[in-house]
Length: 520
Image 1 (spheres, one colour):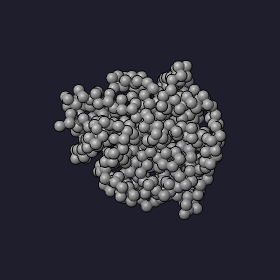
Image 2 (cartoon, rainbow, N blue to C red):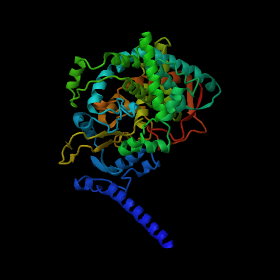
Image 3 (spheres, one colour):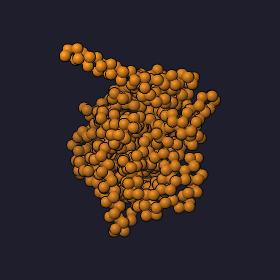
Image 4 (cartoon, helix red, strand yellow):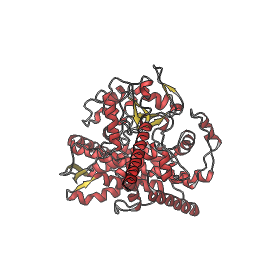
């Protein structure tokens, strides 16, 4: 019996050792990939490649890429590995421009898997690959023009008045608030009314269903981090486990919410100047018309692909508009308020501009009023510089590409990292990068910088489609807050910011706690 047990234990040990050996070989066999091609690279770690600290939740992903960026000063690009996948990190703004614009046809995809059958909400504009992305982009672009923004402004303004009323009581008592949550409630209400035509009431009910679902998607947990990494880098396993970035509860909620909204509007012939109305029009029209096909045929991706706007595809677009619209803008505003609280002189100057312009416009915070606040624009731009919502942009090579001035060919399937956070904190591009200085974005300073060293919304054909909307609601929110309230550090304000390692977007690990008071 003892001999049998020993034999069994030996067999198990050999099996485990063999499995570990196979895994080691699988995850390391191509670690000489960049060396063979003459590309400077960072030495990888078995199993993890160069992203171990991000995978283990020790450091925010964009901070990790910044460390690599800083370690290879003078290099135009650096080879690294995400697990076992060869990845190229770009440092040279001209090369970044080449990838994002000049040779966009070789880098038009983000490399995020789309499974329309099993994960319908994954098929949104941010994720979709070349042909379907381009066809849908052509259809959705009209809803984000400046004219459309102006038409929706009165809906935003109503939400800003609700924010103003909500903050009166805590301001009169000089209370401390967690401003990221307050700003998320505000932007959830704006997106709710402008996209879905619904009153979310997030300011009154912080546990409203839409706010709860939005919070669930961006919840910074190690489990969510592992889910995201599995979906992107271990796609067969993710498909086997039927994983989605949002989770089944969120998927079901948004699919049902959008379908109910669409059915109600169609049945009652309700028309509004909002995002949902455009999607319904696309659904009713069906495929692309001749004019749209002509636009697509001139695109470098050669994307001529009919779009059948099914309920699921429609829901996916509403889903990403909701998530991107509330999260990025709330992040922007909370970080901006944090910096204004730490820099009272800048806060005073921004408030003085708001007050002066309001007096010139009869005290009304209209769409036109906001256009006359250039210093507030600088404050917002500097906040986006220091705290870009997406600190890293990704692309995947879709056809072989020769790096200019080299004989190095980037092969199809190679992942590309554009380290936005690192660029924004490069002291050669932005001297003393930790200092909050809106004057970096005056006309002269902006003109001196390479355009592709500032990428808070991306660039090129895949630049954020909702950029105008996001900036407008952020500027409206900031002007509303500055006209009535002052912000200062509280006992719970953490200086400097500690970044949350597990977050999808740039976020404070400790929240943004500030004291709010009425203007003196």
